[in-house]
Length: 399
Image (cartoon, rainbow, N blue to C red; front, side, top):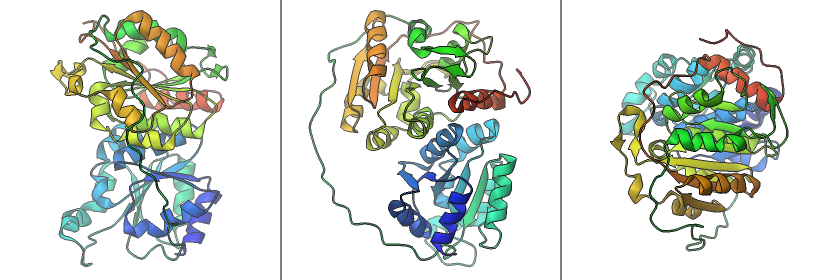
């Protein structure tokens, strides 16, 4: 299938964005997207991050695909099953079929080559082998039905296309230092810090799906952070600018990045945790490279996996602010008291991003902490409606 014909089908069905970790089977597509001004490709650091970015783009009204080698399908199982599947996000996956039975390939692809199609199906994806004669109809049906779909691409299915443009790169070392330095000791618990942040998080919000241009899209990482923020002031489901991530640990940053890329006029605030960020630390590099000026990353750092009992993380020896600057963030700092946090958060949202704010907090949470009562599907529909300025149509109400 000629790549220009394949790309035309994507464009005709509204898919003009993609993120991925490439495979040689997809060289024609990735190269084509680098020279076609109507298409936009983001190079991700992991397949799970690519899924998260594509999901963020799609949620904000910019249908997108995630591209990966089938060996990377294993890396993406968690975000596929705990994000795309439970929220029913209509993201398209393009997965190469290295190690296809009967086709000689490298030994590391032998087992994955045997299970690629069945693994995609087990992950809840509507799965097709990419066939030039059927692709357009199958893609149209998947988008119409609003379901996550995988197309398995065998060697030689996509052909022709340009060579990759030559790279003229300059690699820099040194540069900025974090705006704050020293030793930081926690004064607040996470819920207290979230409570202090609400004025910024809800800025301009006038209804479930209504707000001003300054109303931020707020993405909360999985675990107690999402539970606490929901408990503070969203029990009535009135805060449509918030997305409470269930599962897909480490993917909040990529998901928020996709939203920021899709809607550059709206501030995006990602509320992350130290354990989650460490799981996909490469997302700092992707964020720095994409350089979305409306992206603001807040990391609540207690040096522990608090949702699973307080087991330690390596974060006390990891300077997230310094790492963010090294990866291309424009501003980063660490704080540990309430006043400094409130002032810095308000300032960051007004700055050109990407920015990172690390808030040092205590471990621990209320014993009576509840959980969001909104079903995952309704949580997705509510948030997507807010981003796109459309009415929220509940899929089934609170659970």
